[in-house]
Image 1 (tube, rainbow, N blue to C red):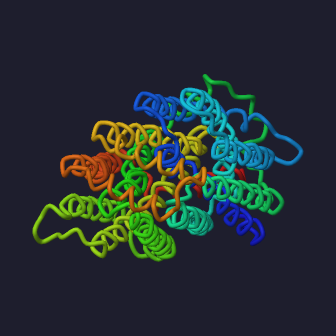
Image 2 (cartoon, helix red, strand yellow; image 1 turned 180 degrees about the horizontal axis):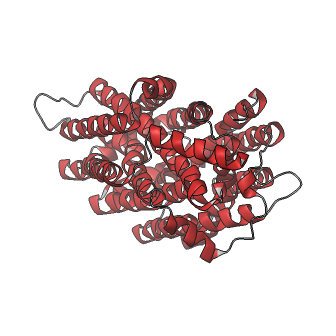
Length: 483
């Protein structure tokens, strides 16, 4: 197998930093920005929640369509790099506008709908091309494990930079702070992806040559014929649902359990646990896969994560589990570590279905098959966003947060000081009932637990490409190319 040069390895992996800074800002904080800085009625907030879900479902559908476009389009710069750069520039501009333009009421709802739709479509340009490039760079299991591990580390750095810092600096001056953060993150997105575009050398595979242009019918045929891609894709969807809710509920959880004035700092510490858990799992991933089979790791960390979610549910409700930030952060670290390992396992398993398809049908479609990962991430994001927003509305937590939003608007206009905002906001939060808080806790813990259980069941029952099987597939492809 052709060895991957260091320039390509590192320029590809480091480029993930800026793009995941941008994705973290929108996916983790855009709804919180609206919830705590825009004075919207329940109907208007519900409309925004519906827009997000609809746009993300469309975005998930749009992912394989984008895969077809990339598969059919070979420009002078290459198959992937033009879309990576164009998507990064357009998406960065839209991010800045989403956190800057602030008409009131239904005018904001309409502008948000257009902006969020464009954000999803432009991010898809970049996302499908970037992830589609990964399996095309190498079929060597060691090289691919290195790319997944190194890229995962830089993804974590990008996400942690945003997820860790933003909660500590926004309370009391949220409107202006979000605006500046959006500008900085947008510029980082462009800069890091430019590094990838300039530094990566794309490869062509023999099975890609002389392929006819693909259409929608061909795309569905490629998906339907691959009996290993289907369970891997469904499991990826379930895993992303399970792993996303803890972070998405995070700010509201800490605000309403510990107060608006302290919540931001506690979110920062919890995000440190997220960063440490994910980074350590990614550093240890090559070592774990060296000594243990993938299915062993999948079973152990899925069950372990489920046990941690059960304990999380009982914190503050059981006498031996007091509501202590130390306990919460320890559980967070263990959950994030487990999910970090599971995430890389599922990425590798999904990518391995590309060679499986190539062997069976003598065709290679990196871009199209790679869209399954993106499709599952977007669709799970839509489902999770619906769960989060419905929980906030039904529990009455959104109605309480609107009082805080009014304070932030006054702070942005210079009418009241930051300290006054924090004091008054704590008073509103203290009005939340134990019933409202338990509804929030249920969304954080029981839904992820159920999703992980189903994910484990499907992978164990239907996915068959283990390490031995994959090596056999790669060897047979190699022999066929030499004939």
